[in-house]
Image (cartoon, rainbow over all chains, first blue to last red; front, top):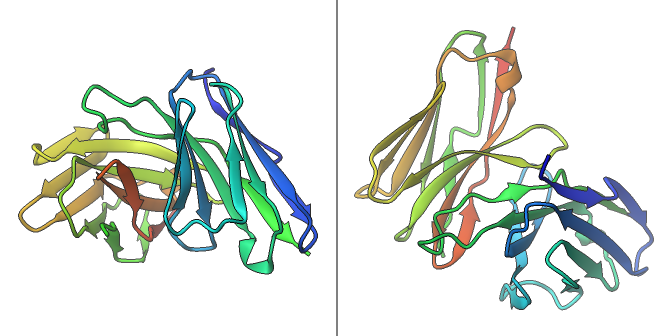
Length: 116
Length: 109
């Protein structure tokens, strides 16, 4: 089945130690998103790619970076994780849609990041 | 900024009852989407209603949209234990999807 896969499901890292989360998709969607979701809160968009075009949200910390080497894969790099970065990180994909926006997003099951 | 906001935050019902959740947003939208999230999992898209639509059905789901009041509601009829989850509305506009805080729904068998 076509899907969005995130690895690993659980990641533990040390304070300040760089960590990379990965996302792959078999949907061949142009757009890929990274969200941060803290406990009992709404998902917060960090950035998204439209093909290779990177779009950063204004309030996303510089500590968060992303790479998209090809259509199928997208990575989230946290350069120096702090305790406040502990959260669920969700990857999602969508097509742009004929209207540019009337398309749902397809989510992976997320990576839960813990900081020691 | 636009932000979906659900009301109420938590709902506990008996199996077979209906569950209603409301959502409000602040600016103009292209569409309003509802998602479900089971504990520890990703979000699953349930239903999308366009800004020019007023009501939409999908199985046991009924969603309404009132653009004059900038509000939407999601009704789950004949709830099942498997409907236990968090439900998020998301307002689509300005090329971004803004999620609300979510409703925790618990369906008691």
